[in-house]
Image (cartoon, rainbow over all chains, first blue to last red; front, side, top):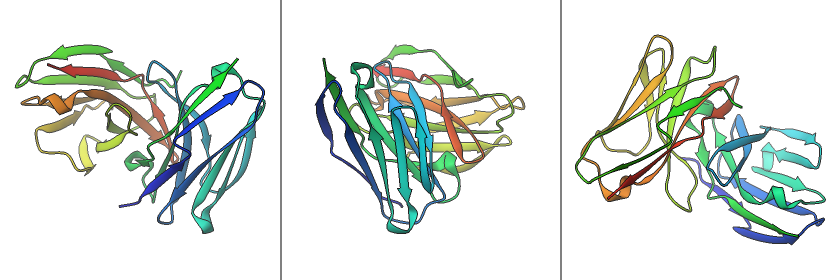
Amino acid sequence: GIQVEQSPPDLILQEGANSTLRCNFSDSVNNLQWFHQNPWGQLINLFYIPSGTKQNGRLSATTVATERYSLLYISSSQTTDSGVYFCAVARTNAGKSTFGDGTTLTVKP
Amino acid sequence: ETGVTQSPTHLIKTRGQQVTLRCSSQSGHNTVSWYQQALGQGPQFIFQYYREEENGRGNFPPRFSGLQFPNYSSELNVNALELDDSALYLCASSLDGELFFGEGSRLTVL
């Protein structure tokens, strides 16, 4: 199956700093999503981005499908951005996605 | 709010018991997937249901089984519970390639 590697595993920032999270995957995919998992376990959809670039407020994401990686950018980080960020990919059927192990982000005031 | 609801939110069982978890998918979504998330790891795909039939399974033993009903809601059943089954169980529905998750059911096996 597809292997998904996220880096870094842990990231600690001061409020206001910028960060870049990376997701590498081992095979071509037609589905890629970024999620933020809150402290209660809920997976919040950030981006559905199998290719290209998208922006939503302070967050943006870029997927270079031909090189099998995706990047999530967080600018002017806030304490509420803390949590675990997951990348999930699938070849065809999104319901059978493979997740990375996540990046745990801690934003300090 | 994803429109995917799960119950119960928390439950405690003992080894050897059986558990049933429930999921109502987002309106109009006819595909439901179940994932297991152990502490400190990413979610792992258990199986998917489409039009009441199992449509793919991950690396989980047969004691993990499921159902999908005509209204597209779904159940996950786990028999002969083991300590390692302690995890967050997530249900997701999908539409046009995008997954939408419920809040999960946190199972503790003692």
